[in-house]
Amino acid sequence: MDSLNKKAVVFTFITVLLLTVLIINFLVNLNYRDTQSKIQSVNVKVDTINSFVKSLNSSYIPSALRVSSNDVMIDLLNYEDQSHQYVSNVDNYFIQNLPGKIQPALNDIISLAAQQGIVIESIEPQYNTINLYQTDPWQVIIKLKFNYKLRDNNNEAIWDIKDREMLAILNVDNYRDPLHLVEEDPGFDLKITKILYLSSYFSDLYNFKKFIENANFTNNPSAPSFLNRLQGEKNLQSAYGIESILDPFYYTNEQSSSNVDYQYYSPVLVLGLCVKDMPINFKLDQDHINYYGREIC
Image (cartoon, rainbow, N blue to C red; front, side):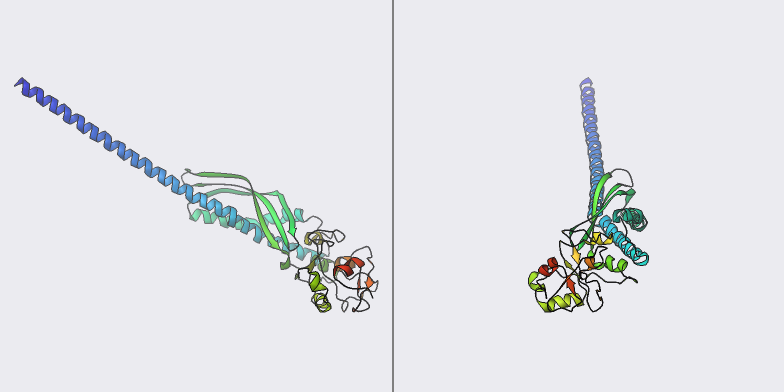
């Protein structure tokens, strides 16, 4: 009898031990699956926010900067048209006027993020870092640094971005020429229509005359750039210079100045020379006669 009791105790002990092992194994597996589920959930949030951050850097913020900068550029040209004054510092003009243009677009980005379960705590343009420059005669680049911070609703994934540099490109041939707006009264709305300089093209007299009649622009490293023209820097030369030539039919040129626009409007008289096969009141300086493949009368 005692032997049976001992066997029953041993059997009970083994049974309890097996049940304990099974319960522990179940709880471990349950905890593991719960942990894996949380990790997967966090990974999904990280991937979602990471994808959104990439879109912010490559699309959303640059687009907001481009559209807003375009509005500021149009306002700047309108100001020069109405006041007949150049803006002395284009960067400062953008620093003063860009905030009011770009903030609504940044608010839209914040709302877009919220729809995807992403909280943008702040987007802060560092307006004092704004810089406008050119690497091409027909484009203006706007550079601006941003700080922004975003997270998911549960604070499980957080991005804190500092000094992120954003660029926007404006095409010069979307705008009116500043010199014609300021120097003429009333200001003459002349849209910058480009023709890329080719010596073989301009050496043809027909093409040269059409270029003048149509009030087109071409690139010339002896001319001021679009940004120079915005600031009234008519006597500066730029690798990204552009110019037009004033039509002698509309400009009498009584002083015999060069008909190249920035020379014609220069406060210092730039005397021109008579050009073969052109009207008597049409003048170019020697450098431009050479540049366009023309001859002196």
